[in-house]
Length: 515
Figure 1 (tube, helix red, strand yellow):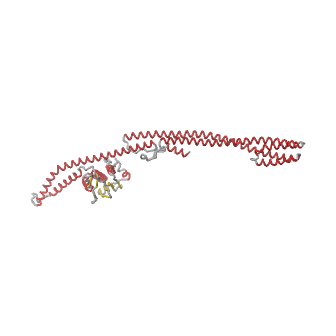
Figure 2 (cartoon, rainbow, N blue to C red):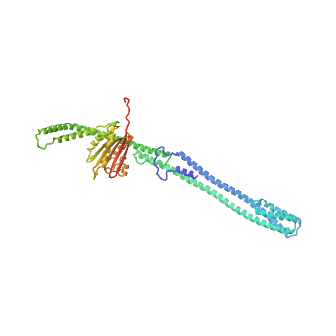
Figure 3 (tube, helix red, strand yellow):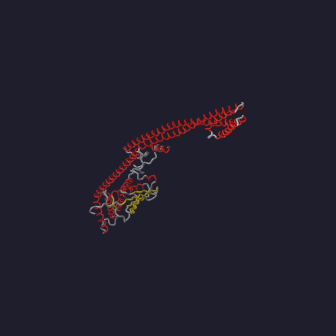
């Protein structure tokens, strides 16, 4: 019964001790339907009433046994009373006969009276052996009186009767004590039945009333919580999920609301990644257009300057230069003109629109172009970029724009980590290799590094330790990598630097009909 009550309390009042349950996915927890909870509660109530009935029934059985025993004692007391009365008459007759002159008929009357008194004691003899022993002596004395009806036979008979009277008194006191105990026990059992009935009734009302009130109060509380959370989600809440504290339909609704919140957050993250990708593509396209226009505008002057400088170099070598003998360095003009041309060519190569569709990518060539491109960023001034590119790296079948965005974000993020670095030369390492069908890109720096708390949150959307950062760089890298079935891992040591490793599995090339 106690186990059933504990089960009922656990199912009907689950979770009221504290909101410490971990949110579970839909279908993870065994569901106990509200209807089943009602059935369990009703079954517990029936069991409670049954237990109360059993307890009362046992007490009634005990009361009935006590009553029956009390009736037997009453009958025994009546028998003792009658036997005592008959025995008293017999003793009185013997005493009178002893003090008078009498004959044989008088002896017969005495014997008949004594035998009548003895007959009244017959039902008691099996239960009281002492009475049986005394009556046996009286039987012998009565037989002697019949055989020799003289006065000398009376003293022994009288003594035997007195002994029987004394033993009968002892038995009577014992029976009356027993009857008193049975009467006391009767009152105790009767009072116990009343106490059990009242106590079980009140306890049942309090217990099941309290459980019912608790159940509905918690149900209303949980439904109000669900309503508030649904409104918050509609208004943009994307924080911690709602604690699932139930395993019934309401708990399923809680898990559904949490799943809806998770799906909305995931969808918003996907939209943000897509928006950032479009922004990156548009920005690169703008840079590419600008670089192409600049290159077009300056290529002709640069070509003219380069041609004139080369003629000056030839004239100087032939000692035909008018300023021969004076400081003349036309080779510097040629060198700087070629440098300008190389820069514009590098910017044009990378800033051109990259494909957003999967194709074969020269990862090492793309890495070199990106390093050349970002080297012009003011954050890269004074930073040494160490390239450790696998010369045997095969072409990777993937999306060039995504690979470019991942490497660029990681390189610029490493450059931010090197800001205000003192005491050592700032360095960034970029490593590429191929490991069992997986492209592995590693970007490391010797910057300030991160503590464990910052490292654990580095990939969170919007999390940043920079005053002007958006907190989207690493998040976008993680989203792009995981969208392609890859993995990204960050290791960092405070004061020593950080390393980010990207693993992109090889994407299978689609088979065309012509192939």
